[in-house]
Length: 215
Image (cartoon, rainbow, N blue to C red; front, side, top):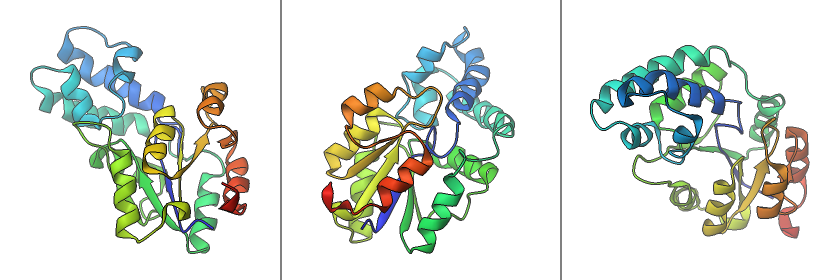
């Protein structure tokens, strides 16, 4: 069975993607001279918030970053719980001595804000953050395998994006696709990750608890 299970944050642990987009729109738009569209913001996803802001703001990006953290913290108070069933699943996995990791594209500060607001500050055994230069989930997954002496077939990742599937493919590990957001494109996820798309947290639990030798 899996000895380590790693989770994405936004769109997997909690419905925080709309929150991220709105925080960027409110805080960064004044620095670029127009209201940022959702598409402009989403195109920077994969980088942490420092990299995202640097990709959008040519001057005073440090001030824009501080404004983002303020907006993100305030808006996050509207979302104070994980998706239904997530806390229960994490608790069960932890009780079975499965190592829990968080591998996110977020930077450390925004991730810490989210974990605090969601009451998950002490849930994860390891946390890997995003980079401002390039998406780095593959490298972070490989780092966890090495650090904990975990083989690839003893590890799985849970994420909501196609990019998560591809990063796991490059790292040679199993990916389960979280498709419990209202906005999930289940058909696209199924095309990229056939047989491993979970429409609910309960569905994910069933996948995890099955003998992973069949994968």
